[in-house]
Image (cartoon, rainbow, N blue to C red; front, side, top):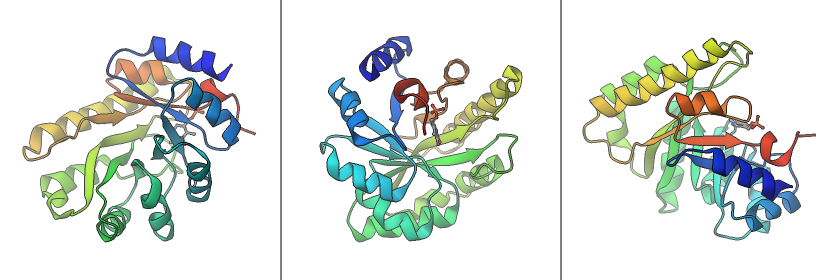
Length: 219
Ligand SMILES: *Cc1c(COP(=O)(O)O)cnc(C)c1O
């Protein structure tokens, strides 16, 4: 079942769009099924759950952290994450940089940008991101590689609003690439979940994060 779901999604993705299987709240047995079907990128949203699953899964899994990251959990997450997609403040970015430097790792991250209507969602504002790159803030990072942006659209049936949110992310992504000449490897635009991935792809997503359509509903 999980293997069939993965297969169906993968064949529907255009070339150049990567798939992160969002396995949060699902038991390790289900992650193994996905792994046996060839999936290697998994997304988790809680530090403890990520750590526990990483210990039980093969070491060639690439773990993507996608949840809100508190500074006191930075150490746990940096120790296992291939990529942290949910960097939602400069403070946590600096904490990640310090921890990665301490363990001599280059931590790949995405900056999470808030474009959705819901205030409850986390992320930097587009202006904060713009300013950060305009003033070359990233030059101060020692052990973090900013690989791109991540974002979520508003949670609504209004397709035009969802489209508008993803367009805004894509435009910001292009703008940063245009203005930061020294910026290398800034090429991931992570947007699109189970229900809105087609719109995200239309708007230029290079990475979708899909849980429900692979593993079914969460608890
Ligand atoms: C849970 C989650 C997803 C996956 O959502 P589905 O609707 O189950 O596909 C994607 N991105 C983030 C940031 C999430 O927290």
